[in-house]
Length: 124
View 1 (cartoon, rainbow, N blue to C red):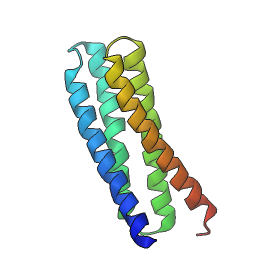
View 2 (view 1 turned 45 degrees about the vertical axis):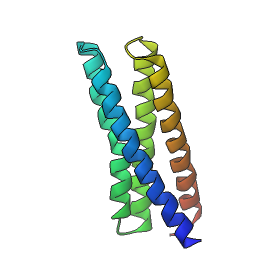
View 3 (view 1 turned 180 degrees about the vertical axis):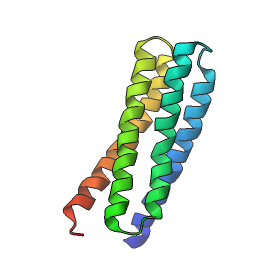
View 4 (view 1 turned 135 degrees about the vertical axis):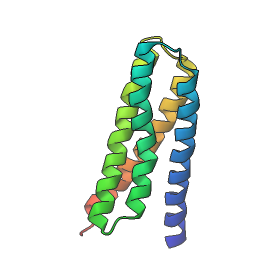
């Protein structure tokens, strides 16, 4: 069982890393307009911080600290959804590509939320 849990944590980190790479490619494809650039800047910060906070969680010194980093990663995922939605609904980005990114960040969000709920149930 321990091996399975470790493998799924690694898979989530790899998944977040790949998501960050896709996000970078997507942002580079956006029109070079001020409004797109401003939203893209926020999107890049939020989207790449999901995986970065999971890496920080791994180096945590306590379960409480680990949970906190996971919560921050979840907040970043939710913020990422917001910025992607703005780009989609403003017509500044390709709807199909945004939908793909939103699907991935939604799945990552659900995994993080489920893990956080499990952590909260456990006694520290």
